[in-house]
Image (cartoon, rainbow over all chains, first blue to last red; front, side, top):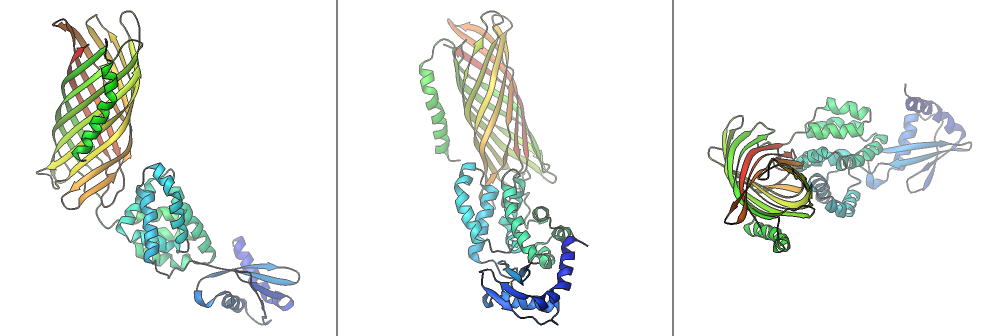
Length: 231
Length: 257
């Protein structure tokens, strides 16, 4: 059993007893706090569900939430963090334009000076789509013929471009994994882009995100035959 | 590439040459002659073509002991390449031309065998046009034009007062290489490729003679050249790794001032 699993199990067993003797304060992301009353007989799952209800705002219905528990002598402070990336949200046309801009420039702009000049514009485009779920980002690329070729072109640019491209994915995958916002969707994602789920699932489970993106780039197939000019 | 752009590029190189040509004095040569060479072209996908190209090389050079070296020369050559892919016989008209200007400095011993060494650098422009004809499956035209920086050295020594031999080695560094494709089905496309250093080795054999009280030199230069354009993923079609090998010779009549 891993260290984190032991902590989780420990919390499951301990929280109801802590509840009996301590105040529980839920802090949301903006710092507002909600004192909670929890019955001594409540199960751990019910407590978490209650916390989630408080943490969710009505406008962002079912986004995954993660909790940090800070246990002091007097109280239990629960910090809630809500994921900003919803797997079920579709990529808008504006976001698609930003994805296309980023991928095509990273794939085919060879002039280092031009790339340097585009740095600010690329960062701005990256910030505009920062709330896109990493699977939706990859899906948008892999299901578009040109962007799919672009992904493979970026993959072949090893020295500077590929590590930078992957870095963004790794950080968003790490964040979403903390909200359990990755593993439930691996199967569907693999099906959508036509890559064997057995290749992706172990990498996702072991949180090898760089390897995960690499495998997607290598294994996703282009719709057309790219070798027309074999002559 | 448009004809007027080509004219501008050629004009630019001769514009660079003008001040040097106007200061011509002893040690300067004008040369012209035919160049014939065998070409082997191999694509990573399995296509292979070979053929012979015929062309003309013309140029000017100033090479004198312990003086700055300057040269400008151009080549225009054309021929037919034939070969096959896995399923088809292919045939194309291949045009290879370039213009190059070089700057350097000549070190030379005073006494026989007058060993001379001239390191140089320069700038050049290359046109490589491959136009596929019947029975090729696609009548596509590849136009690969690019700037390059040549670096190298000329080494020579005399075997007798009339006969000189040497070795010229040049490495070319390409930048911003792109191939334009004119595809009958997809229109005009642009393809990137991975730029690799190109090499050319020449072994000039020069023989002096006199004609009408002017010094004339005949120079036979066997050469080998290697060009490599690396695989690059493009949209909609990839650039497949392509290697060229050139084996040939040129025979130049050199008029010395």
